Image (tube, rainbow, N blue to C red):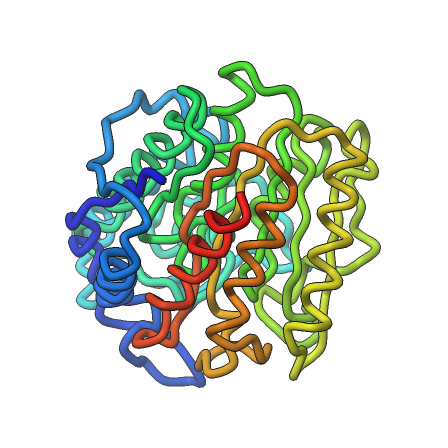
Length: 344
């Protein structure tokens, strides 16, 4: 297995997150990757390789030009406006104010492009988001070149980012970029499995009206869990995408035995679809001790998760997403990959 990683992810090092009415140290922190790297090295799961730089055009197929321009310039505009803290939104175009007009003022502009208030932007956020996309593309290109599996150890994560919105710690949708790259390089039908605790609202929105990517997600019920406004079971796609979006919202306290039945249902759907490649949005916040989630998956059960995913028998690229029990994320990640390699 090729493991694509860059230590430069640490350049994204925001200091603040809005949580519970307070500004706290972000759950999505650089040290998460230290624990993942240590566990992968201990398990000796594959060669660690550096990412290559890819043309921006691959990301521009997923995200709008205006949004990417905003991301590139947000921090400079925020500072130029005299803002003292990190860039965070305070106003949105709410349901009573639907608008397609993008404000010139950065305070309004950041609210236009944000889906939530918890995710701050600082000096090197955009640089790190583009690096994460290169990590995902490098790993995916190994699949195109004939590797059976690869792991994009990317940070920041991506699955909450839609065509023109960021949030949930996500800025560029790395899994969506990977899926599009596979389609552009010979694959016909992509299965995109999101195993993060939180619904991949951005990924769903990007592919919701398409039939070349079958998206499935197992996640905390949006009535109870972020991102709250997408992820219900009746969301099955629209237009050409009808039938190619499968959501499994689950309640607090869900154990692996229940979770695994939903993964099996997704794999059955992928087989029926005729998928020829698999992208996994690999979030580990389904862990029983994750501080911002409510599933009860145990460390050893991630081995079984990897084995289940391998049973699909497809070339597979894993894209790093969430997981905030920092000291446990390494072994949980490594167990998924180890289980996959044992079964493959």
